Image (cartoon, rainbow, N blue to C red):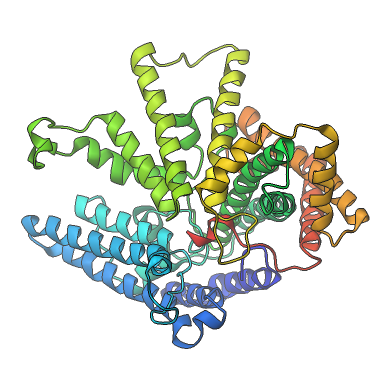
Length: 521
């Protein structure tokens, strides 16, 4: 059950009705935990490989992690100062070891020279990276004294497993969300309107833009040698916008789901493609992850005492900020995936940010106010470099490959090489039309409808981002909609609903919807 499924359209309002109207305050968090576990169970791994008790493993792991983090948090608060660091270090190592086991075990299993069936593959628990990072930030904050340990297990478990964020974040901070979960929540009409104003554009961006784009992208990337440069470049651009609108749409629907229940969770995107440098880009893209890495990896590294390290400590007392930036983005790439394309993607992000910092050190930081032409040139440069890196991200995500199969770095370099070959307008038109037809059982009428809908949906999505960046100084999406004139606002409401319905129909004529790009991290 995903956010864009019809089943979720029933699950969310029923959950909100019971939670806000029928539950007394003392039972709201237990009910929220129960609803989240039901959601998690409905999203369990399925298939012949993960039958029986294997389906129970992800939810058992989630509950075990919740109990472990709850107990460690209480122990951190009571332990002597000297013991706190050892206790925290042991907990961090164990949580990261569990995360690494599930992220890399199946990959390692495929590389071992053993007979098939000797060792069983592990089901990948939904959202394990996101709830692990949320758990780590909670323990770090308790250790630092930024918040008290949560003594109520149900409340902490509801925070870690909340159905609005368990799929793909945003990575919430316990010190922001737990106090909200201690309060009583009741129905509020204006808050419900805000939630709907946020859910509608999120659903539109997912099903009418991202999923529709992927119909073309997957066809082209499924046959890299069979397409020329323009088609491969168009697919790369399509994947860039697919990933953005898919994750942005999910994040807005997640925020709307939480808001409906009276919970405020952080924004995850703020029009990143209008950023003029990569530091600005990463402050607008996947904000909950980049801020997490800033607070819990970069800052501790910068202030770490390197003099105590063997050999290296004789020459270095502190790590340079540039080195710390490199480490953060290398870790980010490795966190995203366990294959070489993701590592290369992380190295590229590190190179972009380190190069930017070195330029600032040599040439000075750019002026905040610059001519429009210069700003747009910078935005174009950031966008081009980001698209270059997206080739590796797409191949790491195995776009165009059947489930269970993967791409490698060789395919990514084949795409980059293919960009510069086969530049024929007629070939591009023929290949693109065939790719679109393949997504609609060779129906020219549906293919033409796809083209018209994609152009209109992309135009509306870009207009919303333009409004948000230039006219509303990156205020949240629901504020952008609410501030429009009544006629414009209602036209937008109807357009968002109609486009979303059309997008759902276009997905092979059904309402299941595609999975979220970040749902497997």
